[in-house]
Length: 81
Length: 462
Image (tube, rainbow over all chains, first blue to last red; front, side):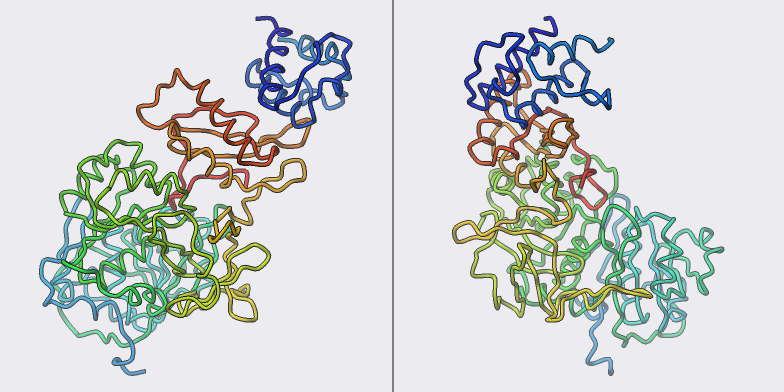
């Protein structure tokens, strides 16, 4: 499964757990429009770290948190394997 | 003080009580004839009035040495086997130690202690009679995980207060066992119960497989046994409980949640099961025998047997004659508040007509500025039929600073292939029962969890 698909499927799983109705996850959807709160993103980042072995937001001290779904996915795709 | 007013352990070791023994995995010693024996090769008298460090690795030898030293020495400091040698010098200074009883005398030649007495296998005592009239102060160490432990001062009268209040056990004298080491408060209580009850004692053995320990408990006819909830979960997990049938099962030292109480009553249908509240500083507070977690709210206030309890700033406070009388040292901290109450640091919450333990004050994990007791989360996870035990802890998060994650051991017979379904079930119950920041973000299934030497679930992030 591609990184993109893993991220989308984990978001759907967390949304179901948190009873959040996700809008269509287009690349330019801003993260706060997903309906996730900061705890939701904290859960997502932790599970992706376990799944993919990377946490792009801790690796780089000065990484700013992405604003859109597309930027969020890119943050994972851009981490060198 | 005349000998009549001071009682010592020897007063409970009458040669008239037959068939009493104390045993470990390697040997069995008769308690019936123990008064005619010594493990100190005629040097007990040299300990009169001294401050003695009891640093004997062997638990059985320690037990016998305690019965000899009590009533002779001014004070006796019990050193648990896992004690770090780095702290020895500090202890010697803080407790004014001027004698050591040890089974490794060579290690003590450079410690600067005036008198080193070698402890050896018990042999018939000969020579001059030793006087046993002194009220020896019993010193114990707190079981904190970091730094130099605190030294806590007790009297034998205080240590045995709850045992005397409970009165003698009905029926034949009990055969006691404990998972604890008897140099710790929880284990010492059981050793003292065995001595005062006229019964026998089976000691634990570090590193012994659970199945071998249970075989030993059966072989020696153990009727009464105590341990921490972690000890008991480990026994239940091992599958070794089958065929073991004690009359009394006791839990202490950690929160006894409903899941472990129910697990024990299923495993030991013929036993009465009680959970006791005790700590090295606060002594034995109370025991709860109704099979339910927590304790009835009316116990707070002027309680039974001279134990008073109050709840202040969320923590349980205890005042009684069973608490330690002081911390011992050069500049000891105050053990009690100005009214004589010991703050246990154990946080409680009133739910309906019972108080429930929610965790340690010092064990709080901080989740995005919100305080969380890991024990509260574990209690919810543990009540799933598929779960044997769990540990909640904090994990660093770049988003919220920290999140809760849980490590879970599945119950035996539980199909690991169902782990995804079980995870969903655990999370669903957590969401119903806990505030959202307490719901684990990640649940990991593990095959074991670390238990400390004191028998408690290891918590590294507390």
